[in-house]
Length: 143
Image 1 (tube, rainbow, N blue to C red):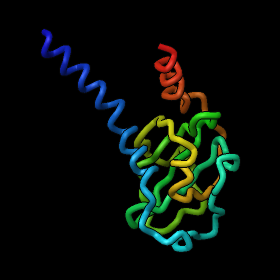
Image 2 (image 1 turned 90 degrees about the vertical axis):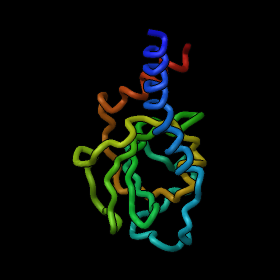
Image 3 (image 1 turned 45 degrees about the vertical axis):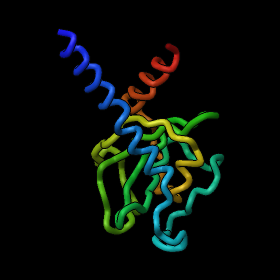
């Protein structure tokens, strides 16, 4: 019984921490692309004050474009949802409804978010259902 309980705790821990750790590492690593390459038509967001809640942002990483959506931005973090879709060419118009969720919620340091030169595609409404992971995060931070 003790072993099963430990395995359950370890599995739960890995499900929560591993995706966030991967995302933080991705945000902390600068891609090996010259900042003038792969910039497309969207404007690169350079300042934390420019980060838009509801914004769908593209990032060039590992020879493809990935997408994240900003759910909440506060004084301490940018809370994002990351999608698993990869694009060979930079998308110019997307809807988060058509994307596949990879990580439902991950808090990131705003400078880590900006390190990969995010480009705003468009701003969408943040649905209440998208905030479920954020609310769980807030509850966990109170404990």
